[in-house]
Length: 287
Image (cartoon, rainbow, N blue to C red; front, side, top):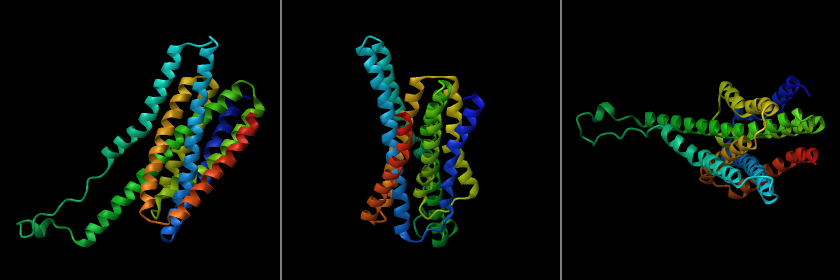
């Protein structure tokens, strides 16, 4: 498979994520609908979390086996463990600190009643409500961008797998990987827009998150075709795992306040199961 064919098919695998994104434009009614879609997204993200850490563990296990059979070095294994820890920390704690810095400040507290400037600066109830709604909207959209970035890191690693297989001449494996990742990425769009709740994103925002989440598959296929690096793969898996875990926690806390616990857990199971089913295509091709 040529470099051009690999890049074109890598782009196809990545940009199927746009299939699920238009759901974010639908006007969902009621808290049950919001919880159902958001927890379905958490189920998809949970599977991705398990998947990326499993791939990272495979790299470490392979290196460890090399050390046991005197085909690898202990310092390199230690270096991979350090990369895993650093990447996971950057994806989880790093994102938390970044969001804390980017989080808008709360509404300004009005002065004590009777102060000289009370009538001048005290906002009306309508203005306060509008400010609160705008802040909630921006936080929801920021959360969606964070999810897209985390999925993008994961998809970059998937693109690496496509590129490596194509460069090695494993055409059938590369083809199945492309089909499997394309199908899997189509479900990841729900993982981005589900946690938005009743916030309706613009088409421009959907285009941006689609590029953030799907574009890295295209880029990864190019890098994987030219460069093979287990350390690079491990870093991306670790960052993706940490970021996805952070996002799952944020969405879970937000949805818990809305109730409908049983429905949410059933939808979480459905999302996780769908992730498993789509991934079986890739596993079948790899076997």
